Image (tube, rainbow, N blue to C red; front, side, top):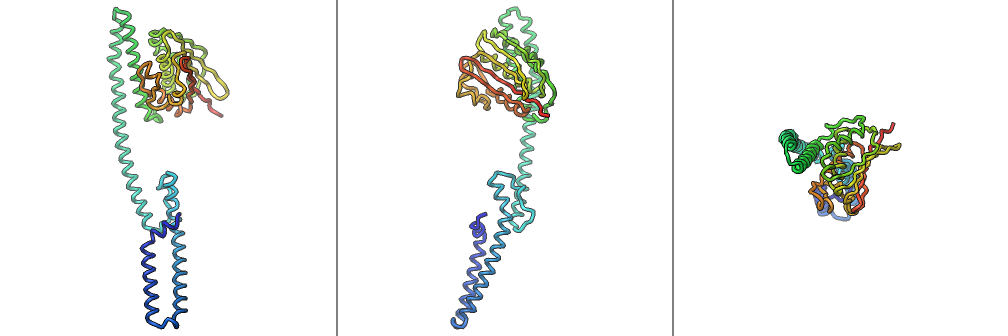
Length: 334
């Protein structure tokens, strides 16, 4: 703690002391001949200054002890209330505590209001998602009864795309309360992948994509619902950016650390300057803007969820050659 700050805080007290000190000296000097009182006056001044410096040193030490934790918390960005000293030497410290208590209460009230508003929006989104499933189901029935096969297939593909986007909105709303909405268990990767492929079959058919599904019969410790969302995003991403008649290869491998699921396509690829940013919120990249409309939220949310689950997503890509996503399902260390 800087002694300059302490002196500045005691500025008025020091000025008052100096004025009294000089007044007393002037009065004593003017009341008696200077020769007879000089040594006594000098001795008295020495004692006053020595005692004053002693009290100043003790006061500075107490002041430094009292405020050191507060200043350290401010500099390190820590919680000030946790660094308040137990012993209070100054009324200012008590005042700071009262101000912090009031501010904490205000922040809690604001947070509660924001949380309530956010919960209302999430509840609305969830209800809206369930409500919209009905007209989508009706559209699917209409598509099945349509005579023009080409139009029916195109309609089914758009319906599947709507389903995918609705699913993305639903998971985005649930991600805010992720800790309350996940269950870790042993999950079969093959079952997950085949279910996702079945949901995306219209994308494979519409673009005449060749699917090479190899051995993925591994068990991992994860949350089935959220992992399904991550893999769905990666496979859908490959379907979106692969060329017509392209190839998507899916396989898994295992080592002592993790089970690694690979999703590889021979699509448009990712530019080198974009690879580091593909998991950024809202980032679509030049290829994303050129091929199809993209929100830039799918990979961002997938990486966010993967990190919370203790997984890792890696990407390797060359422009115009293809992209490979690898999900690491780490094993539990015993």
